[in-house]
Image 1: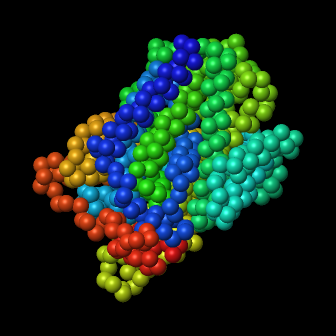
Image 2: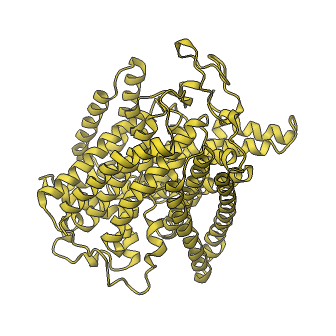
Amino acid sequence: MPAAAVLLGTLALFALGYRFYSVYLAKRVYALEPSFVTPAHAYNDGVDFVPTNKHIVLAHHFISVAGAAPIVGPAIAVFWGWGPALLWVVLGTIFAAGAHDFGSIAVSVRHKGRSIGTLAGDVISRRARVLFLLIIFFLVTMVNAVFAIVVAGLLEQHPAAVLPTAVSLPLAIAVGQIVYRKRTAAIIPSLIALVTLYACIPLGQQIPITLDPVAEAIGISSTVLWILILFLYAYIASRLPVWMLLQPRDYINQHQLVLALVVVAAGVLVGMNTIAAPAFRDDVPADSPSIFPLLFVTIACGAVSGFHSLVASGTTSKQIDKETDSRYVGYMAALGEGSLALASILACTAGVMLFGANQGIEWSSLYATWDDAGADPQGMFVDGVAGFAGNLGIPEGTAQVFGALIIISFAVTTLDTAVRLKRYILQEMSLLAADRFATGSSANRAFRGFSRNLALTTLVAVGLPFGLAMVPGDFALGTLWVLFGTTNQLTAGLALAVIAVWVAKRGRNPIMVVIPLVFLLFMTVWALIEQLVGFIDTGSALDTFLLAPLDAVILVLALWMIVEAFVALRNALRGTADPIDPSSETDQVVAEGGIVVGDRRDGQEPDETTGPEEEK
């Protein structure tokens, strides 16, 4: 199959999805209103709630959710052939991710920028809120652990990428200062920053930076040292206002992603290469896992991803200027994620065969076993991008650094966002715990004090995934990836459940949300049960005492949450459900001059119902 035909055909389907299906969702399902006062205006605090141009919000949201997952997942899943992976990416992106990402923003915007976990309490039940927050807590912990390991491995394998990565941080801060202080458009400063960043690639090749001497001196591996540095960075970056680092870096990374996709697309079109992998593999080793249900949790991003709902309702919804921007930001980001997954599929089935020592060998030798597929998926992508870049005359070494820099930039952005989201979750859970005790009691004060202590909550937010990342062996990018993927897709299904009940309670037909909801929940529960049996059968201490109990806890929480969601959806469809509490929605009354009048007047602080007590 010509790679160019797959590329152009998929992009055409994505364009049709945005042109027609996203409009249907906006008008018939989510009923967006241009006059609605968004939380960014109602609770503008200059830190988290900031009215922002939709293009910049798209950049933040897109790059925050892109991360390494839409690259790593498809790079592993092509083990079964490129056909099933591509089919799931296309259908999952258009019909599942589009409804999920778009809907998560729309629901959160209507409810004061609250997180999807908190909204489960308003829309489904109070128990659902606690259950969902616990599932999200596990998911974000695994996201940070997996992405830190991926980035650390790339920085160790590609020391020439270290210098450009380091330079990207002061560049982003400079762009943020220019845009925020001078109130100027971000496009020119961010493009200048991107050119400067890539100008540092040759310098990085001349001055490769490795931590081996430092790691040896203090008696740890360089990978562990990189992970330590990454979590220290995440601790600091997640404490900064979004305009200072998060937004400008995301905008720069958006240009970088566009450039990466252009390089892949141009390399495919210029080289007119044929996909070397079979569409449907018929020589899968007997001891390999089954494509059902594992395909749908291995591609944990790039088709649909629960982590997107956390970003959508955690940071993105707080920056939406107009409610109608939710369609552009949510659905377009889903298509961008699918495009990145498409690039990964092409890189690992066509581009990788153009790189160095891979030329002239059989593709199946690179994916001989399931362990081979999961050994270095990010490396497969980097080599594939380098192969396509070679069609454009870019030197192999430079192209490799370029490919590594793409994954590093996206994954580091996700680390920052995920730690910030985990801090929100810890604060919400602390406030819930405080409400269980009498006002003024020592326990009440302790939990509320913890929720206000940003240093402590952020330390916990980075400490737990760091501990998980330190588990020895090949656990991280093997078993942990699949467990992360299962929990991620489970979260997507549960987010869709919240959205479906919300849509039904507003008197609209939720069928286009219910279909991907049922599919995802079925596949992820199936995967959780299979993984639990597998962990028990291995008999290893790691599987028996860590992974099996973790899987079992997530499974129990999932089944309980599914029951709660089913009952709420049934009642909503029958018209017997309690209506959504109006006090949970953002006040829409606006006085002259644009000052919001309602639960927060100009100059007042929001009450505790607006979200975690933080950075006021």
